[in-house]
Length: 188
Image 1 (cartoon, rainbow, N blue to C red):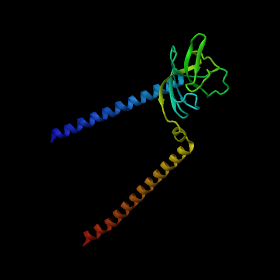
Image 2 (spheres, rainbow, N blue to C red; image 1 turned 90 degrees about the vertical axis):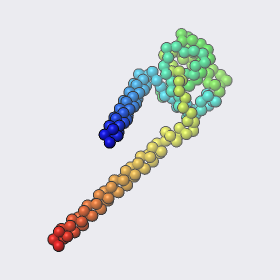
Image 3 (cartoon, rainbow, N blue to C red; image 1 turned 90 degrees about the horizontal axis):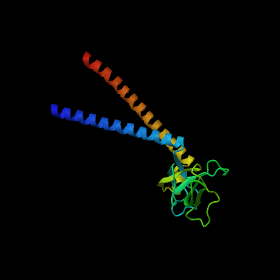
Image 4 (spheres, rainbow, N blue to C red; image 1 turned 135 degrees about the horizontal axis):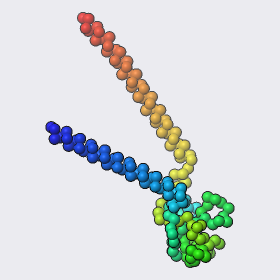
């Protein structure tokens, strides 16, 4: 009996330790990712347009990492200095050039090279992760979806809260009904 109790306690302790380690690891990874994005080492871009088909499609997510040097063939995310849109980045492949005079880039689905020759300072990073969401990203990032989910969660919470309240009230009523019966029974 004691051995089973000790085994259960040890198992719980191990599970608790593993859970704690995973929580700490997840938190640290999240902080590192946020810090990397804030410092500009890591960037997340949602593809818009057909210039990189069939490699990337509209709605795909590309995560890029800042590099010290880039090579011909790398798919990069860059933001030309003279581009009016501050939030607009370009996702294209390096086909020629160098870090000094600038890189020549081209969309995989384009016939002509880009009018800009980004230097390393204009490049946000080399694409390291591709999440092929395509058209699904329109749904995932839709404000209507998030409002609907929030409403559903709120309604479910309310239902659970009201159900719990009703059950508590029923238990109290049952206790009140049982108490006088016990009292009558004791008097008899």
